[in-house]
Image 1 (cartoon, rainbow over the protein chains, first blue to last red):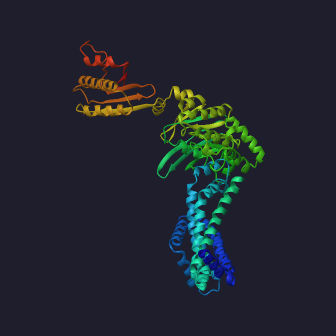
Image 2: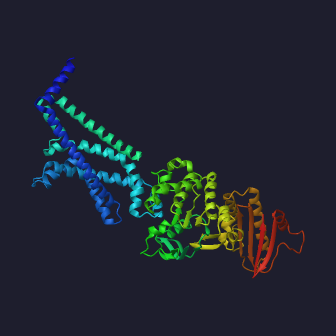
Image 3: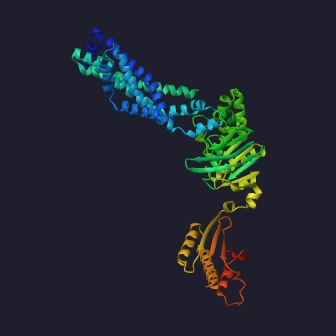
Length: 225
Length: 363
């Protein structure tokens, strides 16, 4: 009974008093924003890097390879700090945008490799079979290779999304008040960090499950067609 | 329909074939045979412009498709290809595999395409598999779907690139039956195959590819019953050949016998036969070198041909010098060696031409 009571007390002091839940929602929104745009631009960056990486021109291949190796090899937090404290140090751009740029580049490099491995796993002779039926190179790629590569890449891409979500928790280092920073602040204010931090973990867990659910939903739709 | 003019192809320094000139008439079924690795597949791929030829031209229906301004996609709509490894679209079910190209390339209405696909499926005997996915089908079924997929575009020509090589013997029949049906319906086709009896049965013309080009060509009857050139003969009759030359009286007969034995063991010739072969050759060599003693340089060449098909051994034994037929010896009964030879041989013959004695012995 005492335990339950203490939880209710913690809940009240952390989330209800001073409208703590509103602050948490705001932080959550920032986290989702960085994740969503990071994923969107990351996928675009990944597609471009992957295209260059597989290009017939040797120079482009080498450039893409180097960029990917650099972005994958450097910790995203350091990348973020370089952008915040060096590259955009004198500009007045909102830190959230800077975070989106850093995460896009980092996840873009990972996604480029995911795409490349998925594309190379597709039977190339099927593309050729499509060409023999009169498909142009582009349309054969769109009709045969891409859907198959998408299926192969899906689970790894899903992982990359959740990884991205969790890595956004470091944006507090560059003054952004995201979910992690918010729950940390609340915990510090109320002197009850256990509840606040644990509550934060639960929210991350919830979003991860939501992401997994969205991915399965997409597949079901496609199979229904 | 198909014509190639001086077609050459090499990968780097490796010449695959050069100066290939073939013509396939409308309605003809041409079989392409030859040992593995002689470029049959590359030839097909070059005809379809999947490989760029180094030089030469390919004419399809009179148009030179090696020209840069040709829309190769349009050409390929009427030029089908069936692969050794099927290569069905693995993310689509059988009916979608067949209708994909008609709908997307020739802009056929979906219902119309499906109706046609069902007709093709009934032709290849797979109507009940319409909604199955490729991985649920056996190899033979997949290949039949691949044929239907190719037929869905109403091609003028289909190239079959070893269509049954990836299938186990129980499934080749079903695929060959379909191809035979198509050949009878007058579809122009080229088919590379290792199924000799099928090629003989279905092809109007046969090309034997070897030595980087068309080595011999003719009607199925000419190629299979009466091949003219050495390598064709060896290939058709499944001959394995061992040849050996002796140029001095002091040659190493033990080493020769070991080599003969190794050759024979490789092709599962039984040991009794091996002994007979060695016996016959030893006696012949002794006989010939004894007769020619001191007169001139010894020069003997012999070959052992093993026909896997008939299980027969043919020894061809040549030696230079004066006319000398060991089978017609003056002193009857004196020559034990010849008695031994005539004892083990099924038949034998001797002829003399241009200073060369040739003895043929069947064992």
